Image (cartoon, rainbow, N blue to C red):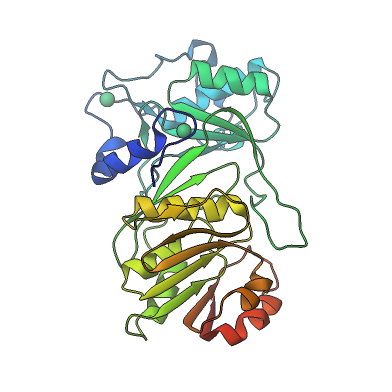
Length: 326
Ligand SMILES: [Zn+2]
Ligand SMILES: [Zn+2]
């Protein structure tokens, strides 16, 4: 399948091509400036916000320290009446870097490498931020503490609002079978901050290693991380499923991007993608027992925090030998 970001800026190819030198993308050159701003102190007391524009603190290498990009956004948000002069770096917004990878050092951002998430932001403010700050590729309205997506069939989905630009991001996820490049439309799929070792991936490793080329049912696949890791680790067959169409669709894209040739149907329900040894469904997990006529070695259930998984576990009990709630 051909993959292209709907924004037309080639977001999805860009990150794939740069995956190999990810450390280099965000590291400073010798001339780059660290403004040494404190996170919990009003930004206005530390820096003359009036002076901030697209060139302020931006190095000849065309990168700028993350905190200066946020300070620049704060300047615009104050002008638009959304934040005030007491606002700290922490309270300005949530920066979502792309491509993101686990690192302890603060990134120096090149152009179009951050999606900005802020509560209470207006469309006018979002458009100004996108037009005036070269490092920002998209602006979302929403609260980082509210998980995006769909919990189950009884709950209506929660999404962030894309107010300007493009929200396609890539996370580089280290796994025991190699790094994955997991894309997501951030307005529609939950935020996951990359960790050097993901507890979910580690839990999967323990189970996969018990079998030789297992068959896996990834019941709640999200953008596909655990199922794709299973395939890369040698799973004989993987069936992906998510009730939330944007997640199931993104799983199909991520399969192709990570080297698994995928055919994709643009339908909102049922089988939406398949390849040599995998299928992608968009179904309620409770219905899988009626749709899939096979038995899997491992069944993975990975839900939103706080969701009671007992009814999910019961519904897939007859489909597999071992159920793992991750
Ligand atoms: Zn895009
Ligand atoms: Zn530089």
